[in-house]
Each structure stands twice: as structure tokens, then as C-alpha cells.
Length: 315
Image 1: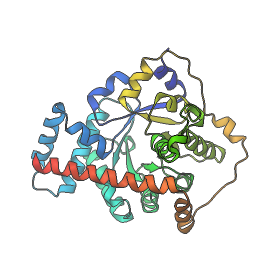
Image 2: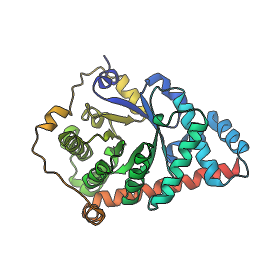
Image 3: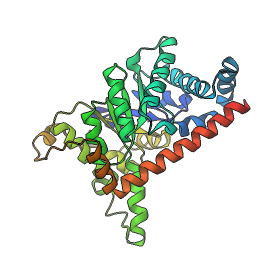
Image 4: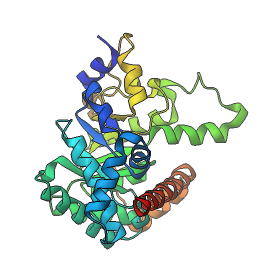
């Protein structure tokens, strides 16, 4: 049995791509997209007609609406090839505006429903800022499920659990990147691999906290740099994996064992934490890595959203 099939025994495998023509070979349950992945896909020749058709159909509408319609078009194509859910992201430039995030999310859901898709097959991706988490709390109360992204800290995870969000996406690779960069010449790759990888440690801590306290929010490790980070999180609720790493797993026959275990987590001694807004902001501020990576992630997604808008205007 290859490692991809072995991983599927413990964990729901999710494809991290906008390139829906690649999906079938890996048979993922779910798929995730973001502005960067959609931007990458629409620049490929095979997706150019999809961009042109969407823009032509809605020319004259507000740019943000055409953008949402393009994201939903990709989402619908993806849902045609997978059995589960697709994650579609709210514009990162709204990351500090709760009401605007709620409105944009509701429109995205309405666009999917207009295509005949059930609300439960879509997760609205929102950055895990305080405002984003509050928007997700309101959306969940209305039956719209959310995926809280750009998540780098325990404080973000705990606040998301309190808000009863459907799913969180802690970013393994970007946590690893930060620690590696800050260690500089002192970084020891072998010593910080597998279970000792700082990104793996972060997701493991969040997973154990959620399972210990019976928090229903799903944990989906994201943003992987290597296969070792993935195999060290076998047993996590879900893992969203880029096609190149899915291919590596499918080509590897090495044995794979469960690394995370909900039953073991329930027996651990873990202190409960609660956050109000001030406490959350202070805890996030105390975490230099999470503060920097959250801000950097929002900026990068915003840049790619602007690039996507330029392609829409040029189509």
C-alpha cells in the first residue's frame, strides 16, 4: 500500500489546488482554494476559456462580484470531481471588517446555491483575525460553514473553537519557514524534522487541545513543505496537500503509522483557556511568529487578489 492510501485510513485527504483537472488521479475527499491558487490556475492555457467565459457572462457587473463568480465557477468545477466540500476564500482585504466578510460570504453561498449546490458542500475561508473569527461565528449561527485560514497560533485556534467554526487550517509549512529563517545558521534540519518540526508541533498541540476538551471544530493541517510534515500528522482530522506532495505520497511504499490520536489526547493533562477580544489580541501580539505570518499572509493574498482583478479586467 502506498503512503497516500495508508494516510487515507487515518485522515481525510484534501487537495490544495485550483487546478481541478489534476484532482481525479488523487481521489481526495475535499479540495481547498485561495486567491493565489486560482491565480496560478487561470494563467494556465487550459483554464483561459473559463476566465473568458465568466468575464463575458458578467461584464459590466462590479469587479468584486465578477471575482466571486470566477471563484465559484472554479469551485463548481472542483465539486464536479470530488465527493466532499470545497473551500472558497473571502477577499483577504476584508480581513479586518466583520460585517463586510459576512456579506461577501453570504453572496458566495448564494452563487453556489444558484448553481444547485447544497450549502454543506462549501466552506467559506476567512483569515483567523479577531474580526474574521467573529464573522465566522455569525456565519456558523446562520448555517454557513467556515474554514479559518492563516492560522499560526494556539490563541487563534482556541478563539475559533469558542466561535464553533466548522474547520481550521493551521499552516505547518509557514510556521516551519519562520523558525528556520530565525534560527539561521543554527538551524538543524534533521533535529527539527518529523514530530520535532515546529509546524507539526503546533498542529499537534491544537489537535490534542480540541480532542481533550471535545471541541467539534475540525483540524486540517495545511501548507506543507515536505512529505515528512504530512506523515508526522497522520491521524489529524484532515490534511490539505498540494498535488506534487500527493504524487510523492502515492509513489512511496514506506510504512505509515498513526501519529495523532484522539483517545490519547483525552487522557492528557491540559489546562483550559478562554479568550475575550483583549485577551486574544494580547496573546497573538505575544507570539511574534503568528503575528508576522498572519500579516504577511493577508498581504500576499491581497496582492494575488489584485492580480486576479487585473486579469479579469484584461479578459
